[in-house]
Length: 235
Image 1 (cartoon, helix red, strand yellow):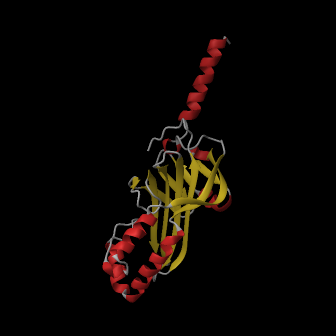
Image 2 (tube, helix red, strand yellow):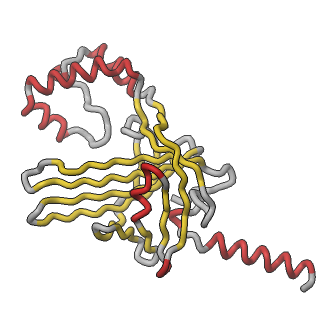
Image 3 (cartoon, one colour):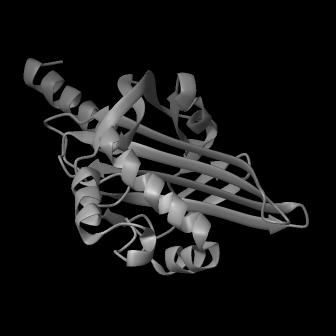
């Protein structure tokens, strides 16, 4: 084979390999190449605790109002100001200042690896505390994620505000929900990009509730991983 033909063939193979990675993983992972990630959470400075304690005390004082007020608030964002929260306007402003100073705190290093499984499915295998996501399989043709519980269906895209729990990020999400005579099961998986464009993240949550509404299981997982400077996101 002539040299230029060999190069052309090599480039074609490289292109095919890149293309076979499902779009939802493109720019995040490369097939069969391990990537170091970190389990952690975006948390505010410890000084915020004194304000949280005051809100908790107010919630215990008027539980009915607090439940209704919390239910009417926008999910994933701090509660809007109300004097019944037990904070003055000045304290609430300081609370929000501390909340907006949140940073990602890593708790455990893990390894992530995108692999193609039998039947054309894809799996992000993970080590340590992130190993739970290794049980999930992505089916590109159906755009669903298969878990031991059932099929997670694609729902609306994520475009989280800066003041949301994890900060500003965009991504894709899948959800499974089932209710039986034994209780309710909820499972969510999301993959996306932080606003800094330097880190990607995987968010996973699994909940089991009894018929009476008692929480039997609530497992939440946030894994942050670096993005290649040459990668382009296709959310």
